[in-house]
Structure formats: C-alpha cells, structure tokens
Length: 359
Ligand code: UD1
Figure (cartoon, rainbow, N blue to C red):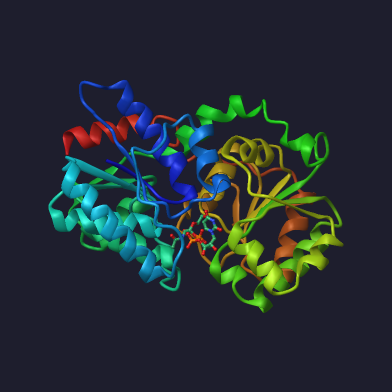
C-alpha cells in the first residue's frame, strides 16, 4: 500500500508505483490518497502529469488543524488497513499524512517502510521535523536518500539493520520527466522565454503566517525583481496570507509575477530554465542541486545538508539584506562547480523495491 497525501509526496510515490507494476510477480501495489491536498492544481494535476492512475482509495480528509487533520487521516485509514491487510505500507516524506498512516500501521502490526528517512533539520518548531522523528521511530524499514540520514538514525538508536541507503527517489521522477517537460509552453505563457528570470516558492508557516516576516521577505524579493523578473507560483496558504495582510498591491506593482500553482511538468520546465531559484521548499533544494541551478533557501536550517555540501544550495534565512546580498552574488558570479549526490541517479525506486523484498 503506497500512501500519498500532499503535493510533495506524489513525485516520490510515482516511480515506486511504476517499478512495482513492472514486477507483477513480486508486487501488487495499491495507492491510497489521504486527501490532505485536494485542489486539482495541488493533486490531480500531479497524478495526470506523473502518469499515475486514480488512487485506489481516496480518504478525502482535506484541510484542518494539525491534530484534527492527523486524527481524521488515522480514523479513515485504519478502516482501509483492516479491510485490505497489506503486507507493507510505504509512506514517503514528512507531511501529516506520513506520520498518521505510519502510526495506524504500526499499531495494527503492518510493516511500515519510510522513504526519505533520516532527514533532520534539528528544528522542532517545524511540524515536518516532528513528523520525521516520529515516523522514523516506528518504521520497520528506513530508506534513506543520503548518508547523513543513516548517521542521524544511528545516533537516535535505530538498529542499523533497519536502515538502507537507497538514494533519492524524487530524482527518479525528475530525470524521467525532464525531456517530456520540454513540451510545456509555460515559459512563453509567463513571458520569460529566452530571458533571465528567477523562480520563487514560499509556503512554510514560519515564513508566511506572520505579516512582519512575509512583508520583510517581500522587500528583498521586490529589490531582486528590479534585476530580473521573479515568477512566483503561489501556494494556496500563501495566497490567503497575501490577501489577509493586504500585500497584493505591493506585489502587483513590482516585477514579481504571481501565478497559480503549476502542475509537475510545467513547474519543472519553469525552474529548469531559471537563472536563480529562491525557495523554502524541501524538494526544490534537491531538484536545483541535480540541475546545477543556484538555489537560495529562505530558511534558517535545512534537513537536506548535502545540497549545500555538494550542490547549489545556500541557506540565507529571512533577513532581507542577507537575501539580497546572496541573490546579487549568485547573479554576478559564474556557476559553482557542484556535484550530484551519490545515488541520486534515477534508479532509487528499484533499490526501494529490492529492500522491501529483502525486508
Ligand atoms: C503541507 C506539508 C508541508 C509541505 C506542503 C507542500 C504538513 C505538516 N505540511 O503543507 O510539509 O511542504 O504541504 O505543499 O503536512 N490548501 C488548499 N488546497 C489544497 C491544500 C491546502 O487550499 O489542496 C490550503 C488550505 O487552506 C490549508 C492550507 O492550504 O489549510 C495548508 O494546507 P496543509 O496541507 O495543512 O499544509 P501545507 O501548508 O500545504
């Protein structure tokens, strides 16, 4: 049983599903969608782009507070697990659906494999960090994307025989769909074909939920946008906050181009041509590292340090001066010599399936 809940899960589940379908003697995959994300642009567009079938089961849980959302997923998912009796449940990433489904399975005695195990920001104010620590603590098989993950898990007392370094499955999707994404007309549609532009994503509660923080990040972005247009596909959470704080007019008067959230292929086409990416997303730090695109992460910490050590990522926090200085530096210097981390090779799904069989 493969669990998908929120936007960043779908491109991790897709290659595992495809690999299992290629091995029908060994696997009978079933996709369960919790419904944590439900807008067509946040969910269905990704299933379509990634060539995934409709979920076998959709729990339709939707948005709510952390406790309510997690509890609702657990209540609905428990019924499914009791009825279906899977041999394994595979959870990915660090969203509320991840911990909710892992917890249900661990109590029912169904084995849990966690894909993207071991990542740590060491920032417990981040809901995802709590989800990571707890999911790893109760999973039977911990599939890590990078070797820092193995070290973190061992330090937390997890038995080494449960840990398997398989690489980054999200990169299977990136490499697999890069060519197809060339068909997207998104650069033309937003008016940046053939010119230098930056891409921005911003949705962390710590960045967007308080007026002061969001407004001062915007100050820096508006200044950077004087040098090159910034295309900003807006997450629904952020859109609501921009409206609530009355910031829409300032953005409209700047060279920041606010657009609706994009599907997987359109977004890939957009960021893959960018001169610079500014983000607080986890996945985009990894995708830019693989493509060699300079990335400024608007956070104080990252659970993906390998993207800084080997890749293009620079942590810049939320101080406007620091963001501006880092952006101008990135725009004025030649691209750094960077490396693709080990086992981010497009073949992680095969190793995940092998580990499940061996586990
Ligand atoms: C969730 C994940 C986060 C991930 C992000 C990617 C958790 C704790 N957080 O955050 O790790 O980076 O997804 O997007 O699981 N909304 C819609 N339509 C949707 C989904 C959400 O309008 O399809 C709005 C709702 O107002 C909702 C808000 O976005 O209240 C937040 O959604 P939620 O799933 O709670 O968290 P995200 O911020 O999306």
